[in-house]
Structure formats: structure tokens, C-alpha cells
Image (cartoon, rainbow, N blue to C red; front, side, top):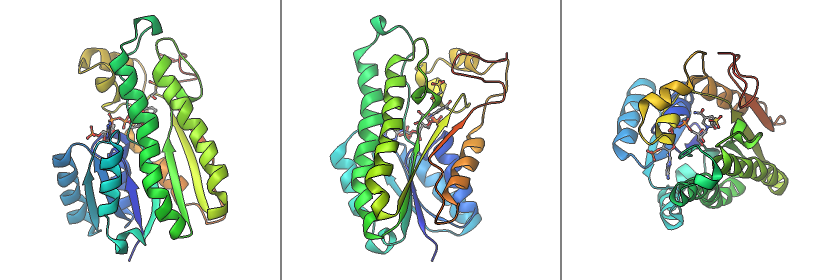
Length: 252
Ligand code: NDP
Ligand code: 8X3
């Protein structure tokens, strides 16, 4: 039986694309997200196409008890074959000067991008340790490498992901658990629609005048990192559109 990859935020964007590429390559999946209907539709589609085992777990990564309960629901048989955790669930909410910041937006980003990633990791790391090998792939961001105008709290949350990737690598090296940080630049997904609270025009403007990355570009990168030989780990990957030189420099 093939091994399992657990993907957070598999209902859209990078996470959904990761589910597709891993299933196509005959990996079994544990797909998670809040939108249960999307998880069930994806499960049916990928099971029909690839005949892999797919477990769906619907929970909010911000709720520690819900995270723990969901991971506890996974059968021992599946846990024994769990090899990869992709910490992908995340979001930006709002973009503007810090002195105009909305506290609720800040809390959503910190609770999801930092605390949610920690809750999921806390629940899954014991499983990887007992399997005596594993791979955690954290989806950071170019916002975790640079700070840009109006990005303040989102950038801080992704700098935290960058730091946690380094810290996890140090703390888990003796358990043969690889840790990879992937830091994408501009990629067109539901990300900007969420960031601009449903304002599609504002979201579309982010990607106009250049060719952004796609979710498939990121999923292929994740899959490549996940399938290196046992003795090779890719620590940190920054991936941007060819038209992007930094957070703020775009060839439009
Ligand atoms: P999408 O908005 O397309 O997907 C985000 C995913 O995260 C959804 O599946 C969503 O599921 C899930 N999610 C969000 N909040 C929660 C929550 N509280 N609990 C559980 N799941 C949650 O965005 P992307 O695919 O673009 O983003 C994926 C990751 O990549 C994020 O961490 C983002 O910060 C990062 N990133 C994105 C970039 C981009 O330009 N698009 C660039 C660099 C990094 P649901 O709503 O069903 O819960
Ligand atoms: C998403 C990329 O540049 O909008 O993390 O912060 S950016």
C-alpha cells in the first residue's frame, strides 16, 4: 500500500493542486479544509481517476481541539503510512498601513498562518516520529523573506513560518524528519479574493499585466521536494514568476 500525504487547505489553490499531483502519482491522501463539500467532490474525482485511498477531514486549523480530534480520527493503519505533512492552509486578510489595521484581520492571519500551522504540526509530528521518518513541507511566502508596503501582519506571519521551518529542521533532524520551506511569489488562486474580502476587481488587478504563477507550478515544486532521495532535503525554495524580481518589483 502506498504512503499517505496530509494536505491542509486542500479545498482550493495550492493545496487542491497538490492533492491532484500526489493522487496522479499514486499517493494516498488525507485532505483537509473547512469546506467539506469541496473535499468530498475532490475525493470522488481523484478516487475515480486514480483509485487511491482518500481520507477527508473537515476542520478549522485555528481550533486546537478540533485539529487534535480530527488527527485522532485517522486510523492506526493510515497513520502508520503517513509520510508527508503539507502545511499549506493560510491566508492574507486586508492590505494597508499598519496604523489603519483591523484587529480582527490581524487575528485571523496570526491564528491561521502561525497558530494553525503549529496546532496541525503538534498533532502530526508524533505520528511521523513513531514512523521513524517523515517530511514536513511548510508553505511560506516571499512575504516571509521580505516586507512590503501594506503587508505588515501577513508578512510577519510568514516570517514566523520561515522561522518555524528552520526551527523544526533543527529539532526534528534526529528523527529523520525532513523540513522544507517553500516561499512563492505572486500566484493566482483564491488568495487575493480572500485578501480583498470578495472584491474580485481588486484581486484581478494584482495579477494584471504579467503572467503570475499558477497553483500547478507550486504543486509541482512541492512534489519535486517531496520525492528527492532519502538522503536529500531541499531546505528552502523561493519561487516567483519570471516577471517578478521582488515583492514590489514586477515587469508589467
Ligand atoms: P487559496 O485561498 O486558494 O487556498 C487557501 C486554502 O487554505 C483553502 O483550501 C482554505 O480552505 C484553507 N484555509 C484557510 N483558512 C483556513 C482555516 N482557518 N482552517 C482550515 N483551512 C483553511 O490560497 P492559496 O492556495 O494561494 O494559499 C495557500 C497558501 O499559500 C497560504 O498559506 C498562502 O499564504 C500561501 N501563499 C500564497 C501565495 C499566492 O500568491 N497565492 C504566495 C505565497 C504563499 P477552506 O476555506 O475550505 O478552509
Ligand atoms: C502571497 C504573496 O506577495 O501577496 O504570500 O505576499 S504576496
